[in-house]
Length: 209
Image (cartoon, rainbow, N blue to C red; front, side):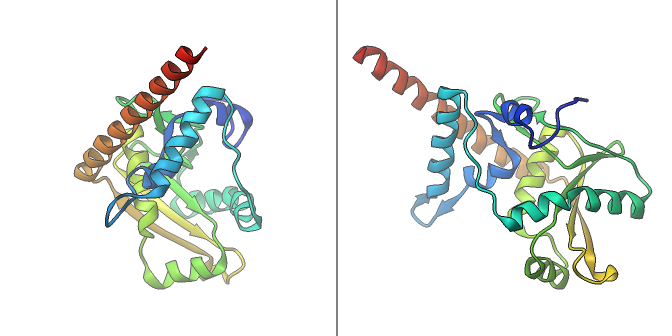
């Protein structure tokens, strides 16, 4: 679909100023008293990206780098176990909501997606014992399905530091159309607020000039 590779400079430009699947949880974050601080912080980040054309700096630590380095191995393992080929895509725009999209870790067959995590060993063990997909990733995967119009997403947790029979965990999450509709409403509201703030800023400083 594209020669652009995820995490490249060209990929960052494709996503610039747009709501992405990995951050939809910030869009919908709430506390007992209202919207969470992460929502406002993410909105400010996207405003800065749109006004400057420069992608926000992303913090990377050793654990995050480990995840990136082991993603390809996890993808190969998934393909081998399921006897399927996986199409890698850089970014898929939401079909109806402008300035939003997703970067799934792979398209599987005609209706599926792949989301890979290669976390620290403690997190992987927790996932093995729970046997479920951590809740914070379900929102990400549902948004990916909304953007790609796919029906399921396989969540993979991979840690080759453990024995072979414990290194790979896979759990399928089915499309939840009701939840997706709720997410779409909240993302649309979030983007409308973002546009209004940009317009207010530009009007303010246009008058000042």
